[in-house]
Amino acid sequence: MQLYLIRHGQAGSRDNYDLLSSLGQLQAQLLGEYFRSAGVSFRAAYAGSMRRQRETAEIVLGEMTDSPEIRTDARWNEFSLEGLWKTLAPRLLAENGQFARDYHTLHAPNPNIDRVMTSCDVELIRAWIRNHHPCEGVEPWTEFRGRVEASRSELACYGPGESVAVFTSATPTAVWCGSALEVDERRIFRIAGVLGNTSFSTLRLRDGELTLFSLNNTPHLREATLRTFR
Image (cartoon, rainbow, N blue to C red; front, side, top):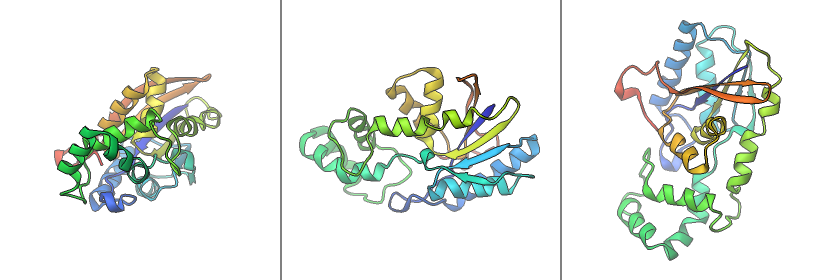
């Protein structure tokens, strides 16, 4: 079977991230139109339970013909960067001088900074992966990766020639692509960092083997102003 991993459209601000901006809605519409014109069809469609993922799925599939019903599967949800900021950031501010300096330069004067992955975000994620401090209420990296990959056996039930769409986020997509390439966590997040909004990556799952065919495709976003990363 062929798997399309589709990242959600541009989301809102850092304070209200789990919804699509007007540009994000347009990106999803253009992707649906592209799939229709290219003759792409899906045997099944899944979406995480986050609003931005589900809304992207509804818009994209709404532009296509004979689209399958969207099946919600929370295993495709993104990790909680907001949770890391609430639980882990105070500890890093107290013990990591560089993190504190970057925070006071980037975040303190601009609490509504959005659509930009800052050095503080990167350091939070690195500390999370290292399990530097267990974060109450935030799933550990190992559990996150495990639940993202847990649907592999279910997807293997689809046959040759069948295509399945999964509407998800950057990190789950990078986990699957990284698994196909057998890369480590650092490289997984390098993949996640370059995935554009409504980009799609394609993989083949056959006899338990995962093969990456394409990464971060955005043929539907012809103008540079349409390409975003948050």
